[in-house]
Image (cartoon, rainbow, N blue to C red; front, side, top):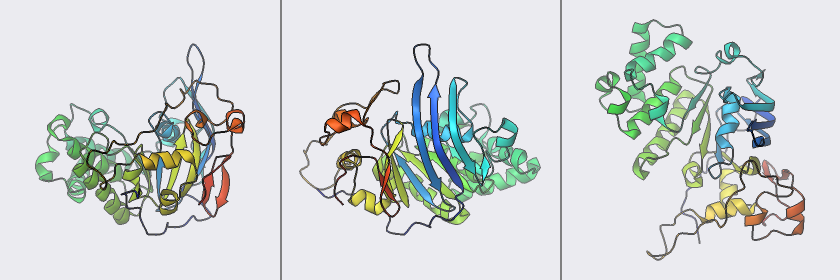
Length: 338
């Protein structure tokens, strides 16, 4: 069956010699009484200036923890190793003072749930203006004026009235627009959007994705779009990385990866995207089995128990992430044909 997504046909902005964000062998683990949990294992990736990278995978695959480590926002029981460089400066070992030179200004994040990310007892305008007071050394008067203007830019209706409201007085879609406005106030170089359309209906989802597309073009920022839904990132990302059990298993240009997946997991994710064509009562396809638990010890390929192509080698030998064509990689002993 033909998928119903519409991947972007525009070429990627290209990868310059100096990516804006560069991760090398990044691993994240959480200390537990029974045993440490490995959430992210040896992940390497680059994000170019003005590029949009989509990161997809099922819940629990390590997508969020990967970038929480980059932002220095992991909890106290977490440890990370490897390297994360933003504009050439190492972030992983940086203290809070050094991190705050970037966080909220050049490097920002839109979190999954705006209701828990916004301060409930402060008005929207106060929370927005505070970003510019702290990171741009603006006066409260200047910051409030700029914040009202940003609400207009992200298409918040009746922005002046919303400015004096509290988070609980706004709908989910409006709260997400406020979070986007907050992330863009200092015109950052890179925005990380973590499941920005979660819990929104499909109409609002489309509006949020279109808003991110417009603001990316207007601000000239790079964007990392994290999602469990390939269809969400298909029309926005220049390049997609697929994550499973804490590792990148496939990456490539959006159109090529979606129409010619090489990893069986990617192919299964694509097969699960709902179609508009076909019988009305057709049962939606599902991905059989369950992903491994983060604390599980795995000798071979983590996807082998769920993979229809798995052989003995897959269960005993972990496949490395290898180049298969220009700009594309796959971690599979028996990749699908192009």
